[in-house]
Image (cartoon, rainbow, N blue to C red):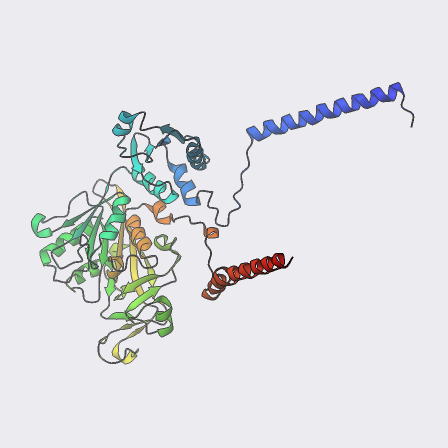
Length: 463
């Protein structure tokens, strides 16, 4: 084809127009990429995205959120922390981060309560708190504390051989108390003999398995507290005192005599349980209290807690009952001795076949004298051992215990919150596969390299 001057100019202008359009498209795409952003988290458990509960929590906060990082002038560290804060900024636009070098501004760090480099101050409005880690669970629980109008005041009844929450022994509850403190609860013991009353600022009254008799005068104080709408956590063991029966009648529940057992040997071996009275719970209902519980919880030496459908007090209560914890169908309520002979189900001795209800929650409306309506929350659990230091670390016992206290204090968002773990960074392999890997990398591979090296050395020597 013969190129003329006209065709040459035509091709020239076509190239110019092409490059202009190409550059224009690049500029337009660059502009839109700056204005509009699309992000997608492809990790297995979405570990780079905030949980739905956290997103809901951030949407409810009406005060600006600010992260102040007291760290050295390290661009890499600043970038990582900014990336972290951007996850929160996506759902709360007024979130921000500020970097302070404590070595250059020691006075500012001291006034903020910073003890050493690397700490982070989380500000919500005019309040702030120092945190040590930046995981989502820590940040969200801190935000819950900062967003609360006041402290949650929990008192443990004492003077009747109840569980000692402040004992560091295996029978104490110091592990639970430490977790409660982190979430903004203030815990104190309370003896009715000293004060003859329950403090007005009490958020939750805890009766932790009283073994000795509760005098009638003290019982009336407790009943008055409940009648006036006070929140109550009542832990009742099989061998607890029965002098609290009038309180059970007032609440419209029945506490059965006996101990819940399960003689499923295979289940005990699988869970590492060696006592038939240690009851695992693996099925949970639709209650908010157990919504985020995904693994087994363990209840050693439990009794049966049941709603009393025929109670005269039910008409006065007019509340919502929920048996949110039940044992497995293979369990039963053993009314006989656990130390004499084999433990077997015997209906003729008033044993009750499972599943057995282990805990009941009660929620009702209370009308105050000033025509104000409040919501009362009560939980009765047929076991106190699951909160003890010796058992609180089993399965989801700690999560359940915290959910109970958060539900009683009406912090429903915190009840639904669960730790976000990245399951795709965990390697779960059987013992046989692990043994094969060990044999290959520790024996076969080194031996193969030695043999290969020896053969190469022999060949080179002969050559």
